[in-house]
Image: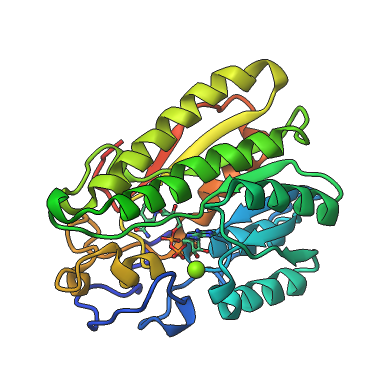
Length: 291
Ligand code: NAD
Ligand code: MG
């Protein structure tokens, strides 16, 4: 009988915080990105994928899964995350696939274009783009939400996705897939995530609009909307320090998800078997039934 993985950690968690962007290897407990558990079934053989935020959390679980499904993978991340990124590259290589690192800050349009060009060069093409990098900083009141933070959140979550997607489309042919990371925050925004929630709603709308634009080119555009997942994003200011120990307790499954538990949605949305699925937002939030 298949069982829910109730062996995964539940709240309360130890109090902890890291400066952004945070490292998975310094979290307690360490997130499960499927390093020991993900089994590939040849669903992405020969595919060429660029994954932003591929060093840790959800992006890392996707990178490991994609490599084990047969894809070559470029990961992008911030230079401070080299330690996490190195581990991911070693898992890609152990899976027998090619893995490349292109670190850099996606808040710069120029870098976003370079990222795509370097990815295409490394991989010899591009047919999967996973726009997953994100910034989330909890601020209780709009009165304390600075223009700098508002701008940084929109640059990372919205502008970069626009710039990277535009550059990537010059190389993507019929059969390619774009998978974006939205959030349940697009639908049930928290009071203290005013700027972040708006960006995630924007990503859901971007996904649906672009899917219509690209339908006749047979390029699919979908998104995944995670609920609470145990990743560095949450321990470096994504939640208030007081609330972090109870992270995930409000979900019916009474715990946060682990990145390993969501990677297969990204695999399925990129795989050719879902060729009739485009413009969709798939949610995984521990049972809230948000979307
Ligand atoms: P994470 O911290 O592991 O991943 C976020 C990544 O974004 C970082 O690793 C970093 O490499 C990248 N990033 C941030 N700013 C960047 C910049 N300026 N330039 C380049 N890269 C940058 O956390 P995660 O939770 O796995 O986040 C992945 C995605 O999932 C994000 O889009 C996030 O909004 C979304 N999400 C997470 C949750 C959750 O509960 N963890 C819930 C819903 C949505
Ligand atoms: Mg990271």
